[in-house]
Length: 121
Image 1: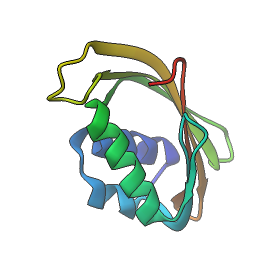
Image 2: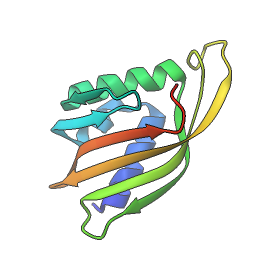
Image 3: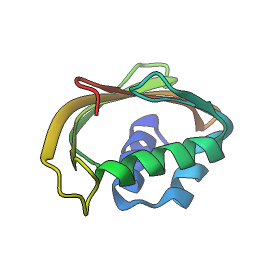
Image 4: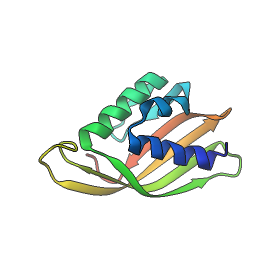
């Protein structure tokens, strides 16, 4: 499967909260870099950290443009992160911020995901 398709699949499963499908796309020792500088290693930690972040802020990704390099080992999504302060059921304000997700890919699976935000949440 082409890296562009796999990256789009990651965005889809994140938006659908299908964390089992997310794990299947990543290497067992994958790294996750979060906007606050936190780094976790391992697919279970990646899953737990991302799920907590997405659910806490009611986050979805929209308007994504997938870009890849010719070797197929790296790609990125320039997107909008949409959510609500305090989570989906929170009483905070809605937000919409630019974000970039950077992927590293090896042997058919992702080995690293880095999430960058224009403003910290």
